[in-house]
Length: 410
Ligand code: C5P
Image (tube, rainbow, N blue to C red; front, side, top):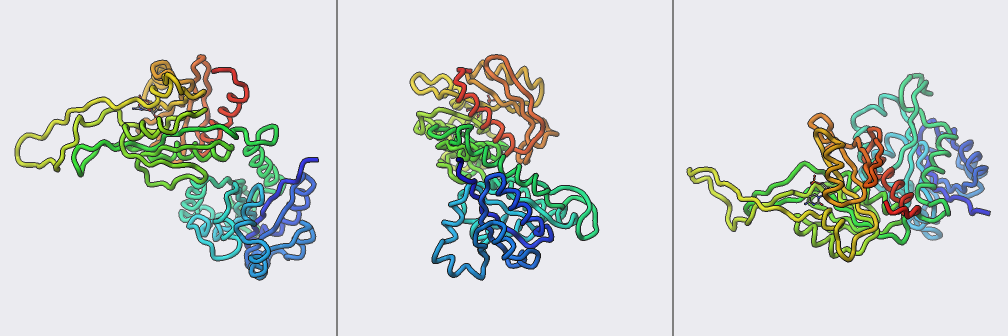
């Protein structure tokens, strides 16, 4: 018999907490084992004893945390489950998660965990729509937190709108979905024992000691891909140009500045099974970096002589001894998208290209969403609907896992 799926279930203080005993009862029928962790406010909405009875396990809250720290540290508690679920997730706990606070047992577990986290928000519609909450949602998504709900409808507070916690059945489906994402069909991580190299972010090419050539890449898409690959069990080397976002969890991150440094770091990381070049590498760099700052001394503006940078993607795709099994590039296009992307696929010799529309109105650079077309060297392709960059990353990782499992060579 399959062992139960172990869930650390964090319950925060919202009226929707009354649905949790029902969720646990039905979850147990579907092979889940719950350890409940309550915030102080949660115990005003649902009795700890009811949760203990229905889960068959001790309920942990801050009153118990002293003994629990001796018996089972919050670090261990946070890591021995397959998934951490927060349901209901109030605006308050989301804000505390987004800012990395650890001022009670629940948030300490959330900060210490290396397991995937799924949250089911529940709050008044005005609170959900508030820019502060939406900022936190965005931040949490970037951190790799998955969401289920909230749904729209009548609220317990008498208002109508978005903010109802997803129904228990839906939360349970989302839990199983998350578990399946981390496991392959055989119950193993689909990319276990695979090494993936991901490039991400822009490069900076110096003109003089204070000026450089750069671009708008935020690194969000590349970092999300690195994170999704790691979640699928791959060993991931992320080679990142200068970005302001954090290194993803569970990834070996190498920080570089220029295209030449990026190439060197990528070549050092070989061999790999998978290479994904999501970086916006500068095509050209100034031929030489001025030793001193160029002066505006009244003469004509300087002209900068440019030379071509190495093409990292083309080098990987044409590597004589260490070509990764699957080499994937990106094509940022502003017009005649598919035609240009297909030409790039052939020119660079890669296996797949993800084309994204970076036209002035797309909001892709620096934004949270991406509209992507996946084009394969065998002439096939598919268009994905507009989705969050983390979903694009997940979808790509699913496609990679399927392709490597098939071994069909394309
Ligand atoms: O030629 P273009 O820059 O449009 O190609 C984009 C793809 O090539 C991206 O996958 C990018 O990461 C990769 N690339 C690279 N090295 C370069 C230029 C682009 O790896 N010097």
